[in-house]
Image (cartoon, rainbow, N blue to C red; front, side, top):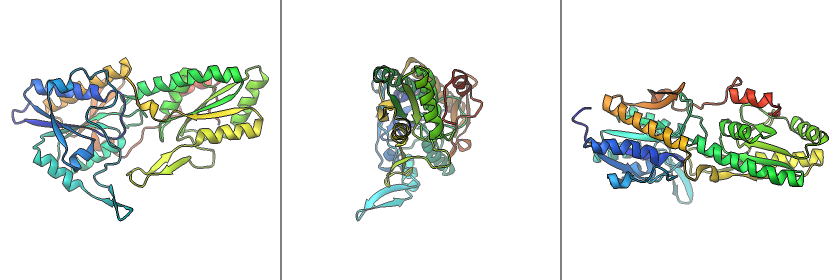
Amino acid sequence: MTKSLKRIGILTGGGDCPGLNAVIRAVAKPAIANGIEVMGIEDGYLGLIEERLRRLRNNDVSGILTTGGTILGSCNKANPSAYSVQENGKWVVHDVRDRVIKSIADFELDTVFVIGGDGTMSGAADLIDRGVNVIGVPKTIDNDLWATDITFGHDTAVTTATEALDKVHTTASSHHRVMVVEVMGRYAGWLALRSGLASGADVILIPEIPFSIEKICDHCITRSKHGKRFTIIAAGEGATLSGGKQFVDHIDESSPDPIRLGGVAKFVADQVSQNTGLESRSMVLGHIQRGGTPTPYDRILATQFGYYAFELLKEGVMNHLVVMKDNKLGSVPIKDVANKVRTVPPDNASMLAARCVGTSFGD
């Protein structure tokens, strides 16, 4: 490790997820032990925009492994290249990257550890272009970050969604209903696929496979005729009707990613009721999928990612993202990851296994 390395910064960008604190702990503890000052950047990139940083000491990063969320706070609306502020009642977009660079210089940060998903890594690529040393750690419940087989936070979200789907089974069977549960995941179907497979959902809807209402209705009716008087449908929020578009709940003009997906579960439940006469209900799990204590798997994975990120710092490997490929830790250039989404391939083992046991994907 270079002796000139004196101070690092850590930020958690985008939406929160379980395991963030484990990464902060795994980076900060060895850094402090090696005489490096650690600055916690509050609320993601917003902390750099507003110059809100605080020193982290051992006591600050002790006892946080099992705690969900992030002790630093996070923000998914602070894209430095497109920062929205209200002026005269209207949202106006500003490029504040110079302000971010100034904060990094003012606090004399040698390296910034950026923990986040695709949007956060796109912001990190901008920093790299301006000469900032960055080390990235992959975080997202959606598991949609390019170049890594898994992101921390995903396993906990799958567990939460699976438990909810399990509970829906009992009321669905009692009332002989079709129950449609909408889970997160944005433009990738990993969360819906894995929670649906784990819970034994009868239908799984994901963005990668446009669905037909007719096929879903036929599946529900066939199950009913064979004495299976209920159907469970796990629907990813980005699932798309065949020949149509994704369902948009609303537009958030204050966000650099303004499209908020949602509504597919209600649409499917309403259509099933109208076309089959089967009683149907819909529900949206929402942000409960982001919360809670990280699973043991996510605690271990996040700690491994944090450890490897610090190893990159020691070796002087900058501007790389820690990844897990074929169950081995490695790294790739952050610029190779920015602005890309990892979707479910058609030959994915979980998808093939679901089809094997009779699960419908509405196609």
